[in-house]
Amino acid sequence: MKNKSFRFKAVDVLYLLMTILPFAFGMVLKVMTTPVSEGIAISGARIFFSLKMPLQNLVITESQINSWLVMVSIFGLCLYFTHGLSPSQPSKRQLIAEWVVEKVDGIIKENMGEYFAGFAPFIAAILGLSAFSSLSSLTGLYPPTSDINVTAGWAILVFILITYYKFKAGPLQYMKSFGDPVPFLAPLNIISEVATPVSMAFRHYGNVLSGAVISVLIATALQGLSSMLLGWLPGLLGDIPFLQIGLPAILSLYFDVFSGLLQAYIFAMLTMLYVAGGFPQDEYEKRKAKKQNKI
Image (cartoon, rainbow, N blue to C red; front, side, top):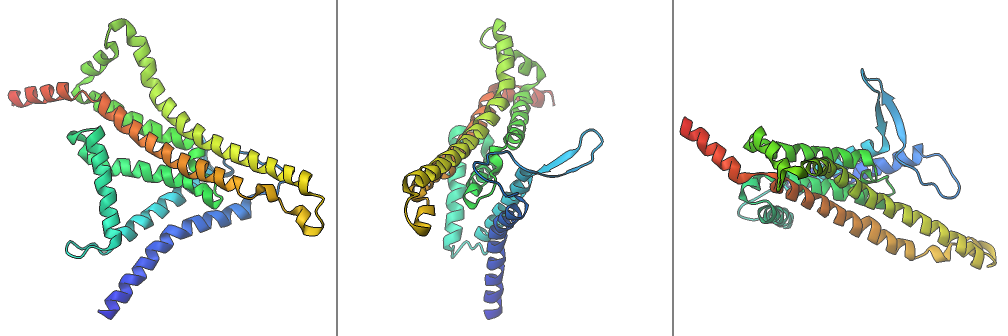
């Protein structure tokens, strides 16, 4: 029993390290590869290297590396919360995991219906990946959600799902949907169809990036103002940016935490609404019944 208990705790530690070490690795990598700069430094994701490909070189950027680090961290966290599941004596972590599953299942049923009950893992993955990517900025990492290439990839995946479920009732029904409610609105409906992934990508990316830029600008301005007003203090006191204490932390609490979590929820909610709203379930059921009658 003791050996088993020790082995159980050792595995727990391993899963926790799998959750924490990716962010530690990312911070070390950033410190070692970021060039020294003075003043305001606002730039996109740094390019580490590129791989030669037949059509176009594959560029490996800071956003891609951090995305993988976030995924490894989430994977370790999931393993930790699901380690040692017991139907008779559930632990606190098991209760937390079950609460998360129940909440996601409830959101799916409320916004998508019983037909999409199997969508819960996908929506939970979107929520977790988006939230952790935005929160990674708290550790000093470049948040993947502030890169348009990352959010555009998510939006394209969602668009493929939307199109797939619209085709469930057949290609003819899909083409007819562009003529709703009247045929002459078809051009606008086509534009709206293409604009869906574009708006999802830019909404998520723009909100996260703008928050990071505003935080940097205000922090730098407060540093300069502190030097101008309090630079006359003797010794090291004149070098301490007193006005920078407090307000940047409050802004970070809003832009990095609240706004990041809000954007993750909005992206997941739009995914559910677009997929479920585009699925012609009545027509699909009729088509399915016709096929069964022919058999």
